Image (cartoon, rainbow, N blue to C red; front, side, top):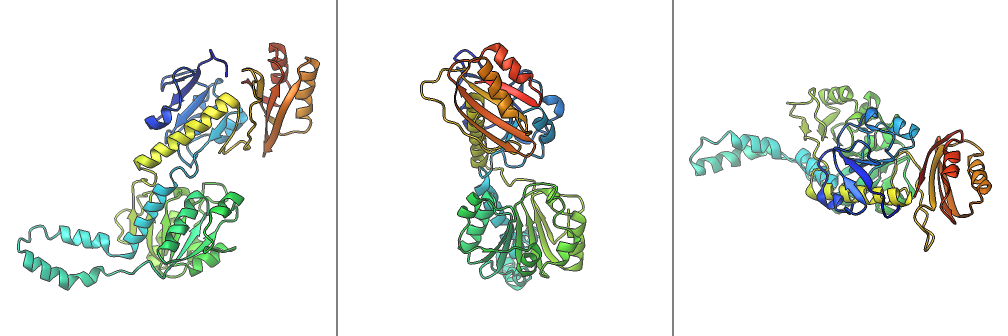
Length: 398
């Protein structure tokens, strides 16, 4: 990044000041009204393809899910999309605990019953009545029960650890478990290879999965039928993970004892065997701050250095700057993942007598990404020649 170039970031939604403060006013302009921004920072705003102007290089979601971002269009235009996995993990973990407690004890019906006694002025009479009626609100303890955790990433691993601390047995299922996630996972978690086996042996099941083609409507009629009778299902993941009709049928049949969800649906409102919350899993001051800070730091490193951490459509890639390197001597190049691209790019640089000092290249699905450090600033002709090369998507001088 040159000393004179001001990087422009367009914001949607209210972003925590602790995150925005990472962008110093000397090098950044942050404004929701920008039309030529190089990056977009948002929370829940439903980003449209029309919002992706030619100047946009990156989109950062201050949160984990990116179903409000048009990923295919971003990838086609060479726009790197970031999220902030784990930044809101503790907030969601604590809400999962509250959901389990509400589902295991007669807390909510007991509170509703007490609210009906507002006209009873004799406290002694009320005390006698409650002693006689409290057995209606008896529940069971979590200790000694079995929790199944489906999805063992940042949130799932915290939920598993919390349940172990509560004296629960924990079963875990995650066919896409990463090495980093495996290291975070408590040793006491029993890893299950078959989701039906987990559902058939758990008293509680908590979902912590992203929305993918493979996970959409994952909790289906067949999987509900595989559940241990009387199971309590908790969904603080995504609404699309669960087939609502299958859940309703499971509740009606008694296969499911309780459904706790952070995603209200009209079919579920008003049922005594359903607890609905207004999508508040990450709605804490701490989570919003953590997400904003993480998103801002990732955007800064990308805009200034081209490094990629926690992208959902581009490969992770990091290259230290050459000590003493001048601004404008690094190229960030995205291209279609086809053979021979790197050779073509390096040939153009060689033809222009531009020496390469260091470089790194990685691919993800149909996209490849390159960072190339040069001994001197590339000419406009060299940059244009690379940009005009077939299958090159975007070239940025950093």
